[in-house]
Length: 185
Ligand SMILES: [Zn+2]
Image (cartoon, rainbow, N blue to C red; front, side):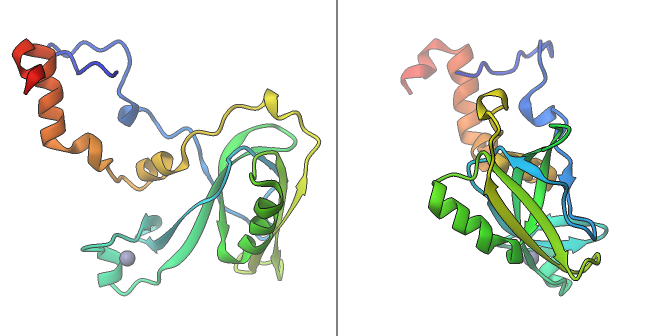
């Protein structure tokens, strides 16, 4: 159970929401991505806009980019480790890369441990990004667990976890910590 913040401002560790994003978004260049081992169980996907020089999730209500008529595209994300350097990143894939990802998922019931290779057809920055997944011989026990993608993406896009921000819930937590009688309320 998380302890509520101390009123005098001391806190041994920053809140999760204050931690920097540890994963760079790994977008494919003209040659695709470097071969990588997938650490995530599955893809997390969303419709996004590229607006004002960055990606932004399409919002169900009051979407600034939709109002500005900016094109909406689907993008999928996976935590991967570079097959050579083991450096971890958040790989971004497109809809065209999904057929092989889905095939692998159906066969193996997880993407974790797959070797993913991508390339663009034609090999240009705007070429269609396709993927090829194969079973890897890597010992997955030596690789970290993948962090929850949705949380990372929410941080990337500056979105807030509605549950955590619910003022009623936060008030109850504070009351429970300071007022013993509030626990029965
Ligand atoms: Zn939108």
